[in-house]
Length: 174
Image 1: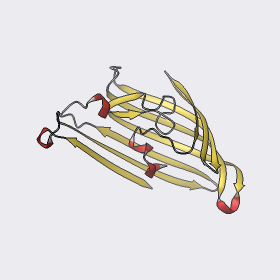
Image 2: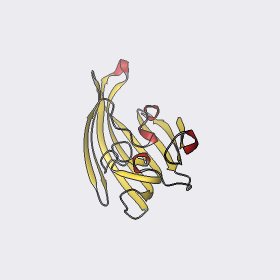
Image 3: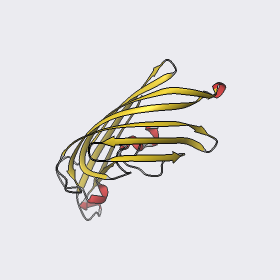
Image 4: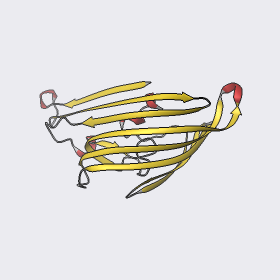
């Protein structure tokens, strides 16, 4: 299990040009099922309603770990909640003594998006993705496809992603 809480505050009394604050939390629980795995993730963030977040400090969602149907950081919001259930099936053992396996996965996600920077109406987004991944000498290889009612995305990654979106993109949750 992994959990994280992050609070950020900008205050004029400390020399900032604007007052704002935000809080974000994430929780992920892994559940082994024989040689397969499942994990459940919950995350959310808010600006606590006191001040509007600057656009560059808004929460960002999108990418393989948070709504794979969208590009990295495509969805910028002042508040959100996210629920994710992912299943990983062991497809093929590569090096059993090192527990290296090629996995196939399926993820189902639901998210509520509020105070969107792009001025799209607040609401919920439902998405699904399928992917295949496994270890290589230079990092984990993953290829996948995600879809939602208004968007779809394809990704190919090798190693650790560079972008940082929601708290679920932090290394603690990988």
